[in-house]
Amino acid sequence: MKTIKVTVWNEYRHEKTNPQVAAIYPEGIHHAIAGYLQNVDALKVVTATLDEPDHGLSDDVLNQTDVLIWWGHMAHGDVRDDIADKVRDRVLQGMGLIVLHSGHGSKVFERLLGTRTGALKWRDDGERERLWVIEHGHPIADGLDEYIEIPKEEMYGERFEIPAPDELVFISWFEGGEVFRSGCCYRRGKGKLFYFRPGHETFPVYHHPQILQVIKNAVKWAAPAQGASVSYGRVNPIEPINS
Image 1 (tube, rainbow, N blue to C red):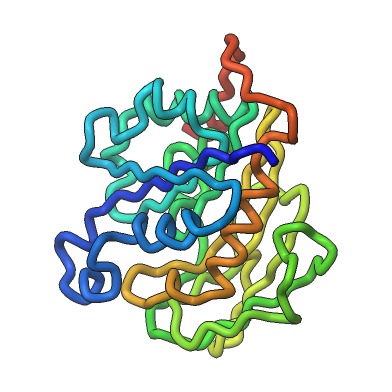
Image 2: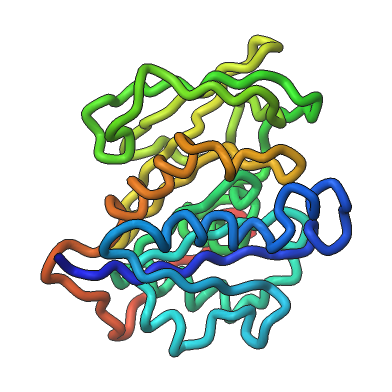
């Protein structure tokens, strides 16, 4: 079985400035996710954060990454353009990318989807979320029941300004009645991209076993196929439609 090399990237800003977040994730959101994944067979997991040199995403790191997991929120603008471009190019060349929660507003996500993706409804009242599985045969939904119940979460609601997903695996329902496309699959170049909505920093979402199971499944789905490798030749970059 081929080893999948995973890099979990996190801004790691909220945990340093918000005592509530620090209490939930004392070592950071990246370590909560990586700590789970490193116990999964055939995964080799490292972490990277915004304030490291090159945001922890040097050429050497990216060249050794099969799947990159991205969590960002308050500091999208602090990500260097050249690093965002390199991540985009690696995805086009075959690296998998999993974008979590507010990462929809990241430079990386916007570059790959070709549009600005920050427009949506939101409300942070700690509402119950029911994450419905609408494609039970999809590998990312493997082992799940009809839905995942999250006791308290930030609400995201439609309209979510993204291109239509190639595959939609999850739809969220919230107590206020809103719905949201919460599990979106895309193919960009040779790479696979999965956007997964849950993960507001003030709730222990990344301690939820089924949420972590989805991330694990997504890593295996997004990884280059057995026997394939990420190609690091030149590619023609795509630029956002709205800049």
